[in-house]
Length: 202
Image 1 (cartoon, rainbow, N blue to C red):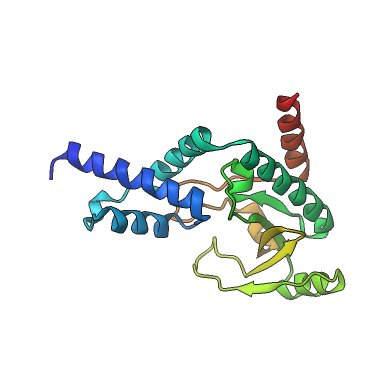
Image 2: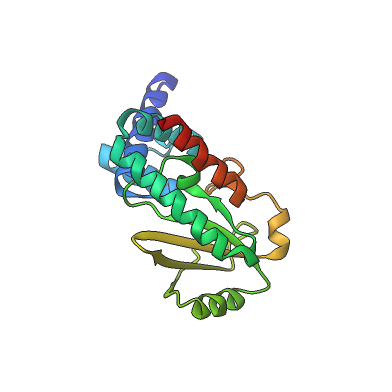
């Protein structure tokens, strides 16, 4: 297989994986790449693009196809993030994932990172706040893996809260797949982001 042909396959898989992530709410790059390759009929592992290549295609897809309804949904999710981050202030919350990046789709969740002595402390807090939540399986291991993943709905907005210990806050975290450092934002940065969005609409 020539290098040019291989690059063409990688671009095709990256573009298709980006569409799957945008339209189906897939947040696992590896799963999206494998599904895209399978749907396109490619089995060669060399045809799989990097996470960075898929992310570039995802930003291009969002820029091309996002409409006013999508923008309104993103703004609604960021506003909900601010409300929940204020509530979870004792746990030093950060916004991360697609809502921060601006690539969130109709099926995306608001993803937060919080820091506590233990996940049990967070669960007790949520019970006292009358927040009904569920545990989600932690599917990865290593220093970037959270102690627990708690999911709940805030009105009609789904949230995923990744709980880490306090020491982990000082450690840079990588995106799934380890291609680059994950972006995250404290409350003041999210509030500023919303303010910028509103200013651009005026």
